[in-house]
Image (cartoon, rainbow, N blue to C red):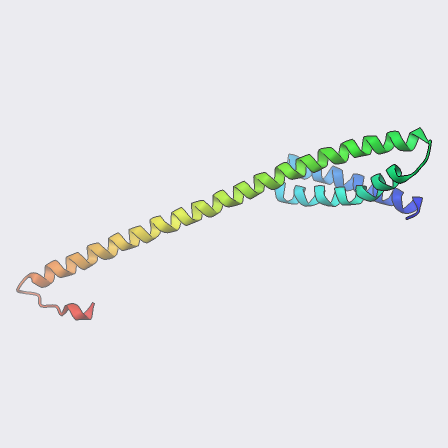
Length: 134
């Protein structure tokens, strides 16, 4: 990978980082997580190349350390978002399940009430109802 490619990766990574932070501030966590991951993927080759170089150039080393710190922040935030989204989805599934149980119970109670009403009316001499029809 030549230096032009690395510069393009770095610029694209910066744009993705800005976008990820904006989405995060706007509480669009699902989209922000995707952008953080994309951003991290763009910075990985740059960091590994700069640390792999046997250069005495302090500029590269300083820049790499700074970039690595930022990427570390993005990784931590992406991890937090992933855990939070996972908890939120789990909670939503639990609420759906509980709601379903409550709905089933209501339906059962209504059917039980209707059945008992029909049975009571069938016991009265005026109304003869064949229970087999139910």
